[in-house]
Image (cartoon, rainbow, N blue to C red; front, side):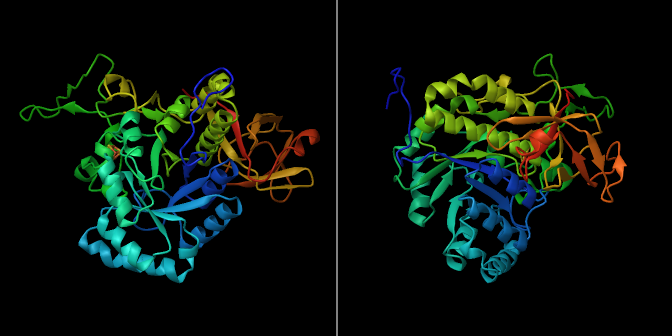
Amino acid sequence: MHNNNNETVYRLKSGKKPELLIPAGNLDVLKVAIDYGADAVYIGGQKFGLRAKADNFSIEDMIEGADYAHNAGAKLYVTVNIFAHNDDIEGVKDYFNTIKESGLEEKIDAFIISDPGIFTLAKKMLPGIDIHISTQSNNTNYLTYNFWHDMGATRVVAARELSLNEIETIRNNIPDDMEIEAFMHGAMCISYSGRCLLSSYFTGRDANKGACTHPCRWKYSIVEEKRPGEYLPVEEDDRGTYIFNSKDLCMIEYIPEMIKAGIDSFKIEGRMKTALYVAVVTRTYRQAIDDYYKDAKLYKSRMDYYREEISACTYRQFTTGFYFHKTNENSQIYDNNTYIKNYTYLGFVEEINDGLIKLHQKNKFSVGDEISFMAYDGENIHAVVKGMYDEKMTPMESAPHPKQLFYIELEKEILQDIKKGMIIRSRHCEA
Ligand code: SF4
């Protein structure tokens, strides 16, 4: 397909737009993802997902989250992607029984599973729920995709180690109704598709059971056994020693290439990320995908804006991972392992009442500060805090206590543009 300038414009064979798939670590973040434009959200239950440290969802939260997603026309996927040991099997059966008894079989759109044993158990106990094969299963070729299609899976998540050319070859050799999901944005595991023993070895917490402590981000030296306490630096180059520390994936500039490869679902990584991060990344990718489908020229012309927005939320330096070539020394971060933050998350709008906005404090701000509300359509509504009041309507200068519930007063003219659920942030460079 070509546009007026005779540029090639890519579309999926299915005729659909690619799905924007967003992670959520708790119910509040799920709602943020949906409000800012996610087509689907993936979450972990309290057991058997690969993000044990995310808050995770109780059965009640899952029900509320599924209803919230479905009311907005979005989908809900639940991870059950641990590598189960014998001792885990009875627990997984109990978990599946609880899902069945709670009526969640009707509400969960798909499970994300990596273990073939758990796959067969889910098929048998909860046949109404589609199954997506997790990236943890190292899905690297079209025979694997066809195998899972024959087994009854509806989607396979591509291994992060594939190039876009390889994914396109997979697309051309699998049935049209088999969906391909691939990572679009977020942290990379330095090990092969997350199969990693570093965390188990150093801390006893198993990455393959969702308890990774991220030792790949730590700083390493060599110690010679007869000279304890003498740390010999490991230097890949003169910038430093973070030998395992990958940059984050960011493909916002390559939406046409992702569509050309036949990827049905664009996945954002990060079930432990904050609501601010999820709002910014979701809103920006939503706009970029929609802009491309409206007009490829519009998409290109707004690239600086997308980059600026994405860079303004919490982030590491970016890479395109394995998509265009094998990773090299430029895919690593050597100077430090910390995130750069350009915005501070202040809270979200709980209620608008009598000209006041009710919120919970996430980070401190004060009367007179400039803040901005992230509108759902992509605009930012800037405001100056005119007044702050506690629950008894006593005026305050700032909200010093974490999670404190309070009210803020703004200029009346902008109140009509502010909606429930909008994220509130402030520009605050901490590079
Ligand atoms: S230590 Fe790093 S590479 Fe290993 S599983 Fe955890 S995040 Fe992935």
